[in-house]
Length: 442
Image (cartoon, rainbow, N blue to C red; front, side, top):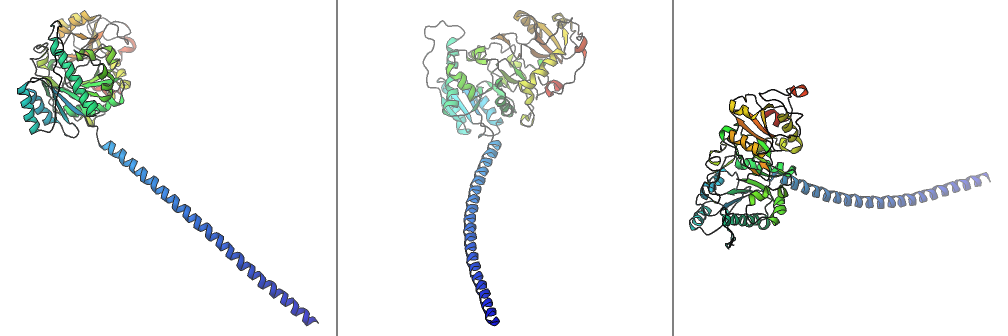
């Protein structure tokens, strides 16, 4: 009997063991199936995510490449040469072609007005020799029929019409974003294009600037310091080789005047309190004694402007000192700390400390001072030539001299002449960190 019980117990245990093995095998198979399914799904998700990541990475690479190319590829600046009836435009063109560093960076567009055959033939010969676009202003109708003939008024109307048409071709039809305007009677400096390429970035950064000029109206050798890297801000529009952007053209182009376009640009409605950049040493000089203006100012001022002959690599310089946020403080401080002289001291040779300043109360006083200094004395839209904030900077016998409005905003009180330095806190010789103030770049 006991043996039977033992056999039954052993049989039951064996059955339980076998049954357990069967259920364990089935559970493991199910588990393996579930795990396999999950692994397949995970693999699919990972591959999908990796594909998405690859797409994102490819897109990021494309964006980075575009950014790098934009950084490496400088902005193209069109060079618009305006011609009419001067065969000597070839003199200007020869220098433009000689000094421009790249035809791709500085494409030249020559626009001729009128039907002066000799000039047209000369331009065609140069076009065959050099790479540039040649345009002809088609509208030659008379503009001043019945008008009183004053100051060659037909000529001034034609010039303004030509400027508007040519600038419209450059910006509206050819779609350039910046342009240097060069007239047919200009000599240019070796670093003419280097200068404009560098200051364009400053124009782009500072909304208080609207143009840059290559010219110093008071640029005679006796009135400048030979620091060819010295640049200034000015409220006076000089022209004679100047840079503007498409944004400015879009602003002023629709309102372009029928005549006297340069005086029009100088008006407050166009300038809107904005300034231009100009060099201490001119990068352009006119040789056009004969023209619409009939040689006004040429013999007395223009022909003796000193043309820079030293190449300055402006592209390697930090020009941020020209930004208004940095420039004005140094400008004001330099004037505030200058020695005050009276007008009578000029004739007596008593101006001996640099920098120095002389005050003027009104336009007639300024004209008197300007004549004594032999600098240009005229005002345009209330602004003296080269002035910034009403202040004209020039040199006399190597001494830097500021001609300053009587109501200079940072002047505490007037001081007597004969070179006495203001007292009190203004007597300190400050050493500003601003590069323009330290080196005189104003």
